[in-house]
Image (cartoon, rainbow, N blue to C red):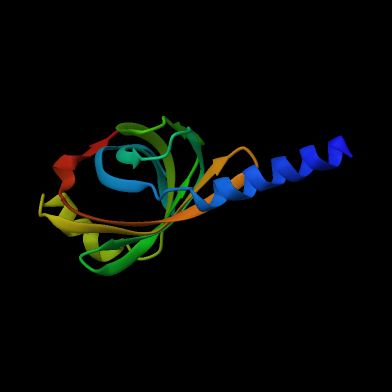
Length: 152
C-alpha cells in the first residue's frame, strides 16, 4: 500500500514538472567557426546565447532547423553533441553542429565578396530533464558576412 502511494506521488510530481517546463529562448548566435567542409555540408562550432528560466539544468539533446539565406532555403542544421544548460541563466554555450546544404551555390559569390546575407534559423530544439523532454521553437535572424565566419 505504501509503495502504491509512493508511486502515485512520484507520478504526480513527474507530470506536474511537465506543465511547469518553461520555454527556452535562443537569443543570439555568434562566433561561427567552420571546422570541416564536405561535399554536401559542413561541421561548425557556434556560440548560442540561450536563456533557461527554469530552476533546473536542461540537457539539449537535439536541434533540427532549416537554414535560410536571404529568405531562400539553403539547407538543414542539426546538433552533433549534447549540451547542458545551467539553471536560471542567460549564458553563451558552444554547440557542435552539422549542416547539410541543399541550395548554397547561389550564395557563394556573395559570401566570397564579403556581402552581407540574412541568416535565418527556423526549427526546434529538444531539451531533456531526466526522463522528460520537450521541444522548443527556434526562430533567429541575423545579418552575416564572410568576416563573421571563422573558416578553419
